[in-house]
Length: 71
Image 1: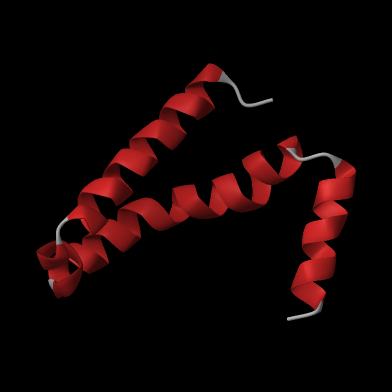
Image 2: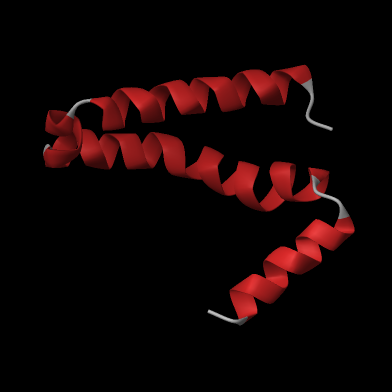
């Protein structure tokens, strides 16, 4: 289960991503896009492959792996 600190980190990440995608001018601006990617990607990677993955039941992990193999 995610800790409260991890929940807060995820909330802040989602806030940044929402800010970025809410206005088309943000993702069309190369500087803003690069800065947002540098700031957010490490958190996205950690949440996807470590924190959230480890919270999933084994059968869900297996289902995801099976889906990825069929791509």
